[in-house]
Length: 137
Image 1: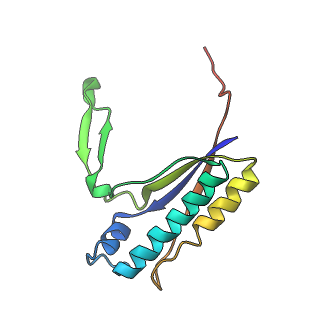
Image 2: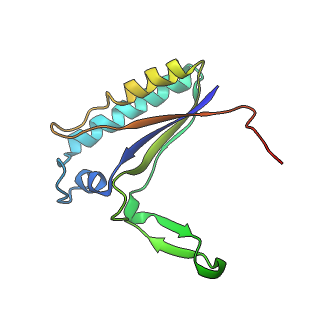
């Protein structure tokens, strides 16, 4: 079964990682290095056991764009960040796992990623991707 594991963060988290004053615990170069090493090890393990399909970290919300329906069907384009959004998708893994329990084990491992003292990880959301999604005509 395929699963998407999604991790969330806020613009303030990205700012703290980039050395900007954000009200969040600041990250050092060593903190970033530890995080990247952890993620590389996790991704390598998932690839070696055949579970990894894809996984990516995403750019900060300030680089995002949202397109919404506007009046008279004319789309409206807005740049980020979005003050009303507390957390956004910051990375994902697309996995082929034996079960939801296995996907949950991986999500728990993701939450073991090192962060600076006082900082937080997660949350991680797990969504299944049905092989045969229901289709109504």
